[in-house]
Length: 437
Image (cartoon, rainbow, N blue to C red; front, side):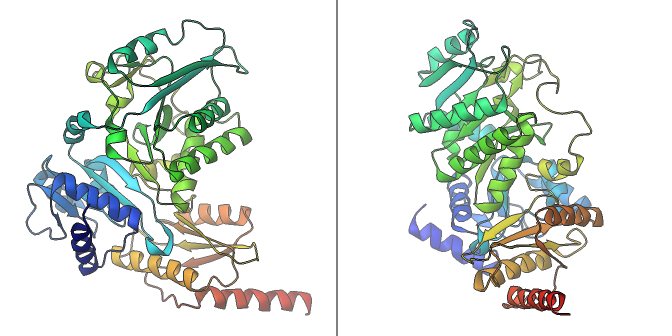
């Protein structure tokens, strides 16, 4: 993106009161280069270009807006952490998200549109080619034969090896994550991991063409699958990988997709992780209706037995993950300070669904700005958005478990620059009264 385009885009965002971090602006600028000029005006839906949506649409308005879109349009939601946007998101094809980046970019940005056809066609011209990596239990000499054979006609670099595993018939999550870390250190290309039961029907160039940090597929639109996982050569991608490896090593009995989900949530809350949610063609299963059009075909049958948990698992995360955002039990944003005091503070923003989107966004900006101005001695801030009272209870429980100071606020509440200093003073008074009654 040229300096002039950057300047014009910054001016448009400032006019609309939209606050984004630089990585989010970079993604937005890339989309402008692909689709055409951006607009904040919904009075006349363009046939092409980038539509920046600042307020949620519901009911008939969302339906009419959706019907007006064409494959030449893409929709960008700059404050997509707000669940008020979930209904419209459910009607669109989800392309990706870019996480918040502290006070400089305190919102999550979501982008989507009408189908993947435009990107799938353009990806064929990508000059960046990923290294395909895979591993399997030592002793099964034929495990990777079909995978190797399918890669031969695409001239892609690959590394497929047998590894020592605890079980003879499968690779456990921590073993897969440790293998990926070795590959990360050994090679310089972006990495695309697939299970050895996979075969390639087309060259898998979409993630590298999009230039993201990480790309994966959500089974049933909410269960993250580790069967196809792309990592770009970025510090943020490495942070996700190392977080996943630590979680897998600490909880080896937990399903790998859930651990990847938690690693994504934690990483996205701390850095502006640029995530692409891969289309089903990159995670097609044997027996799928669309298997003939697959880029990557896995030999699993159409079942969630090996892809995810039972239907009642992690219900609190489903709606959020379907909308590409963190849920109420997870911190939407984590900020740290240089304060020597290691205590943390959890700020819970309640009644998000029942409040004006602008008020919610302004409150998020006020909280992060106040913490950046003066942390009040708190070494860590975790900001959580809650739509309903049940969500507040879950967030409180999680914060209490971490022994954080808990503050509950409402959208539109005045947040002064000394917000955290004042509460730290209150804590000091309460402690003194406890010690010297």
